[in-house]
Image (cartoon, rainbow, N blue to C red; front, side, top):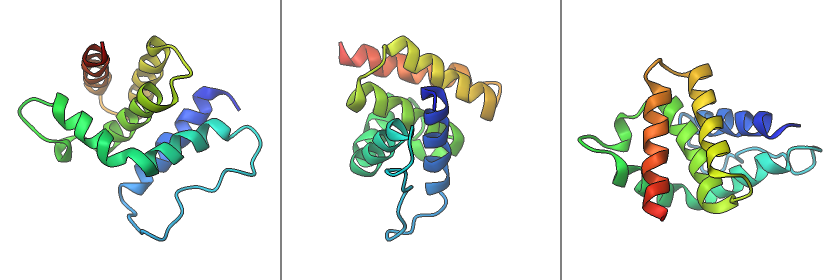
Length: 127
């Protein structure tokens, strides 16, 4: 499975978790499926670090909170931030480009610019 497809699967899974918050519900069991290791890394980091990721996003937003972000955009940001902060296997430019492409495919016309801006601010803050 290509990393693009793995990201998309992770995005869809995280998006669905925003609406199904069962504590006992396993996020996604992909450990036995060949080619899904990268998806599993993203989802494991989501389970471990979501509150920290939320704080990161909230610190970037100006004039509103994370609760007002479209859930699609939030799921895309979460996947990208996990890659940027915890996995660190791909160049930052690739991660941002993949996130923008997901926004173009699944969200509103304004979402790619929003996603790009938030991720750019996060990257600037890391330097």
